[in-house]
Image (cartoon, rainbow, N blue to C red):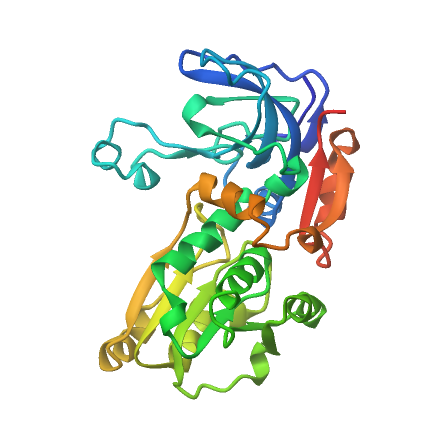
Length: 335
């Protein structure tokens, strides 16, 4: 099969990569389309450890499956592969598996290929009314829904989202539907047009004061190379400076370690203690909830897909996707 991968020769398109075998409890999925995100580009740049096929935002058609009625279904694929046997998996928290593998990271092949083999439990069937191309964003939508569940902003007066990547834009969109006071602080003015489209208050983070008047601040740590004010300890300290006493800081970040995206709250410990602040981590939401939110029409995703490409374009599509103006590149795999 064709596959876009990273190996000792760097990123390349292999026209004869071995088609995976679906073992017991797994299924072979013919990939229809894959989202190319900042995480994938960070892997290409060596900021995330990976050797193998890229791609973790996957939508496909079930090619073969032991489960009756699922063969031929169009599905979104959950990229996380918990071991199922560690203490956290056994206690009902597989999202915190001690031996978690993820499609497209480490040495586990992802979905920028014609086929991918995954456990049946990782499949979420798409409603017939849902466009597969929009469903590639089901995981980041699920992550945003998860943030909204962790902090019920309906009861909060002032809410700020720090960041201007896809995750931050989705979180701001979902939170703003529940609280009109939500604002987004970013460093790329070209992305503020999306906030205007969604009627979300927005401002350049460098112009925002530290008035200690916000009830909730969500700091979104993104894989994209960005301003210091949006990534790492500087962003965390700025967020804490915006919070009122007993306010809540939500730290939303990717599921894999990224070189250059670090979070150190040790310098801010005094502010957390003296202000009696609540710090909440947020990593991953349930894929089915992301699919449900998209199918309900409660999120506007079309403007987040800023480029389209075909797998046959190979390394060229990686270069195009790395343009800072791009948010998400949709890679069509199947004809």
